[in-house]
Length: 384
Length: 241
Ligand SMILES: Nc1ncnc2c1ncn2[C@@H]1O[C@H](COP(=O)(O)OP(=O)(O)OP(=O)(O)O)[C@@H](O)[C@H]1O
Ligand SMILES: [Mg+2]
Image: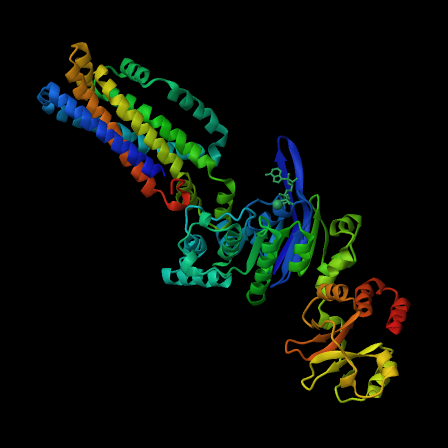
């Protein structure tokens, strides 16, 4: 857990004072990623560097796990904080192995231990240790260097990580890949991370909490969904963009929006059964499943009304399905590309376990706006 | 690329030397040369000793001086202090010798002092420039990992400035070897004795007996340094590799 209390930095240069960070207070719980977000020059880097005292504070203090760090000597403090700078900062004169082993060596690990650790970390980011340990940084691609920069900071397993635009200098496609990789690692590592970015999409993807800065002040500190749904003022609203609700799609999983245990029919059910189920729920189609409960098609109400016989003989193929762990962006994308307003949801085994509708999605996204308006919320509920 | 080029140049030089050898054999120069053999050996040793002493001391003093000037607490003064150093490097080495003589008199000591000074300057300058060129973010990165200051200097700053520092040493030693013959002018001996006496007495062979060893010495030492530069500086910071 890390807590910033009234952190302030005033730079004096040529008789001019710049307040780069103005009374910043926030708290990041253990194991969470907090993204510091804001336009250039708003004080993100300054705030980050005051934590490991690369920049001395003007006033205020930093507490790590409740302990005031003001009294700690900088060397001890820094060896317990992983630090990734924007320029990556691998040392060109050292091999990858030597770069990764710096902090473990400073901490006095024996050779066997730090070499094993370097191999383990390289494996973690899918860089074959045999091929890369003895290389120099200039012999790696930009993306590979960035990966090494991150694992170097992780080497001595510090509980807290400070990362200043760690994936900044890289093309968008590789950036997505590294972000995903990093999030996967974080699931097991559970580090407390302060992460600087000026990219709202990156922030929404990575963050448990987002801290929005503007000209040295912390404007809003909240979950990504709340930042997007309830920007505190015009500045935040403009910063997150006019398509902010679309960005929220990424934050919600299918499993949280789908209608659970929806009605279904089997091959040997009569069309009358299907029609009855659809009329009961006012649906225009129903999902057909096989013996293993995998969705295999759909029966339309218009067909059930006009034809006689078994569902197995009067169904159409599925347009599309979605996994319950996908996010709503995937759902929206599939809806647009398959011209449909609903789809069955399956788990990892392919078993039918829910249905998601356009209505359900829009309702879920809108719900947060109507929290204070009970009557309207109820109206919505009835409408579905 | 550079390696193969220098190889070709080397072979060409050897061929020339061979042809010159054939020519001089015919004209009986070789025999005259052998007359000076003892002098050549003695004076070459003297020459090498002067280079080793003045060059060695120059390296020992110049690198710490360059390091000191490059420290951040010196930043207010270092540019001002570098100014006279830069101006002094433009002073011809002969003038340095003359000045040294006017303060310290004649003999080996003033010669060594002048040589030392002429060798010192390029090394200080390159050490300072090389260290200043190490990107600030590397030092910040090292600081962020909790490296003590002395360790940052030894394992980050100096290795990354090594190529530039080495280039300075190579230039300085070349200047040194080329200047040692002038030391004879203020009474310090060395191969200059054969060269200048040869000129004075209009003895072509005597002059060559001094000049050729000096040239060879310069070529050999520079070759040694180029090899050291290639092999000693780690691949990660060596633009030649
Ligand atoms: N050493 C310094 N001396 C004087 N002013 C400084 C110094 N470092 C930063 N500043 C000023 O402090 C403000 C905040 O800088 P900071 O580096 O924290 O911005 P940032 O949010 O990280 O921006 P970016 O996204 O461009 O990296 C800027 O106005 C900057 O000019
Ligand atoms: Mg910054």
